[in-house]
Image (tube, rainbow, N blue to C red; front, side, top):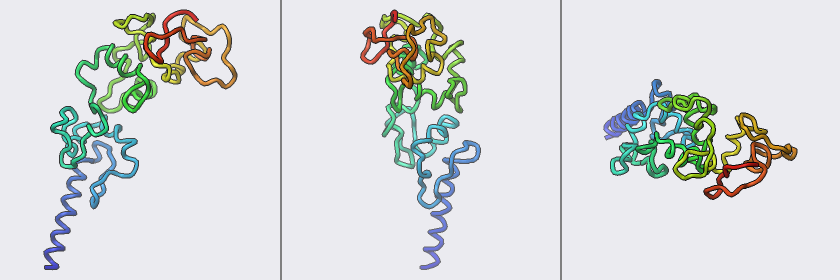
Amino acid sequence: MMRFKTTLLAACTLLLMALATACSDAQSQAPSLDPVSGNHPAGWAQTHWEAYTKDPAKCRTCHGSTTDPAQAGGISKVSCFKCHASPDHPTGWVAGLQHGRLGAQAQPSDFAGFSNCATCHGSDYRQGLGTATSCFTCHTKAPHPDRPWLGGNAGVSSHAFTHEDNAAACAACHLNGANSTRVPATPPAVGAQPGCYNNTLCHDRNLGGPVAGSLAEGGR
């Protein structure tokens, strides 16, 4: 009986190690799973996107589909849809009014905003991780359409629809009016953090954006 238990324990350990290898190996550069618990290491939730962008197929081995909620969960019984509305970008995301208006320009969160895009597409939006492409593959001068990126028409791609909480990302290129035809007439207050309406970027006041929290197209 003791020999049977020992053999069974050894078999279970080997099975868990095999699953760990299937879900994570040197090629994917993902941390190994604990061969006993089968769990990812502590803090994995904060960095798992790195492994996913390098090799999504490795994640699907244990977590099932990343496109169909009905087929998600896999052998781990943990679905990506538990936290993500869609682990992969939805169909049609390549359209500017989709990945721009609904993605980069939206209020920063775990799934939107320029800072969120940077986690996969690089801090300069040029160095995409794994399967993530450089924004400059399509955009030639900046991680947004070429100038003039203006207008309040809902059908036009415009900076006017960018949520003001993205100001820190905008400041990387536009601090003190840099790379813009609009330069603040008055310097910002000492120590002022990047904002859309405090002279740190291009405008000194809110002109009434087309959507709540957005920057309005127009003069100073």
